[in-house]
Length: 469
Image 1 (cartoon, rainbow, N blue to C red):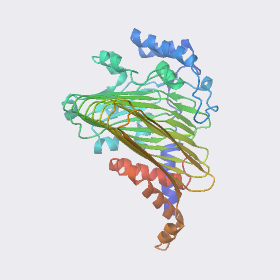
Image 2: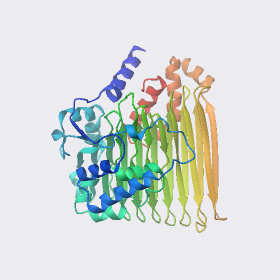
Image 3: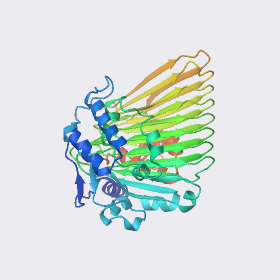
Image 4: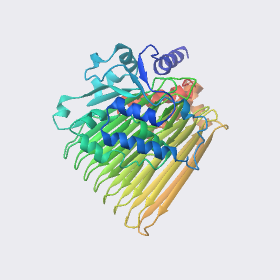
């Protein structure tokens, strides 16, 4: 047990308790006004169209109402949120050029080591700005573009950004999409040319380190015809006594005969409101895969959406959430079948402990012309005590009589017999329960690269012993 406690204390200290308050920042005032939006736009040196777009989004936000469903976010007061926090450093293309204070943060998170071992490129964002971005020379030689989105906006890819930016996620869809459009900052841009297979994943890592701040990065990915890409997103934040907000946006455009996988490990602290929006459109004969692990955060609204617009396109979604004390995680996915012979498969798993609440929302829409499309949705919940709660909320809209849709939901608890069997083999009760929970999450972890599967299993162990704050 002493060894286990040391492991927990070490990881908890490294991931949650270190803060870099000595770093010098530039930040705007709290709240959201026209002056603040213009101040951010000036700081970013926006082109005129982007400045006007920000102001349009602000107007939409000011006239928006929260949706009449989902968890209440009354504890989030935007008047107290700082929408832009910039470390006083530029973006580095070499790791040794990153300021020491910030570099120490990412080294504790294992970013440089992961880059050396298993990544084709890395972007690292600290609060509102990218502080590091790099891509392997051999990948760049294939014509792959991987850079921060603001450099792309001001460079030769500006027209490509303008043609795609918030064209999938529209500002009028919900208040936090409009908020994102008004104050967005940072994020990555990826373009994979036709026929290029990026065999090693790219990763962007987002660290929100300032208390009372929001992070609004925008990730834009374009995978052209016959191309392949695996993109990994990592997120974390230290624990504070005030609310933090994450309202990022991910837009992905997948061409014909292409394949895209997007893997996420979200490891926020429990003062975070995670209100992220992700969406992809998929061309004919193409495939989209989502792999998602959601840990931490006080409250989450997270429902990646896939638009299967091309004939014979497909989507697979595999996700897990872990809700502990004081957490309400409202997660799931949406899929719209538009093309003919499209298929979708959804496997969601949720774990609840110490009064945590997990809601799984799934939406499947079969359009009138989506002949012979198929969708299967499976939602499984594991309850670790009688105080917790898990709900499955499906929405199915089928407008084509030649299609096939199924939905299955199951809920259960850890088997006392399984715990007893493991304990009879010399394993402690705590470790036995953790092993069973890790096995429950295996369908997600096996889809991740080895280093990230290990990270996810470590997070589950930490949640099981109540070490994540």
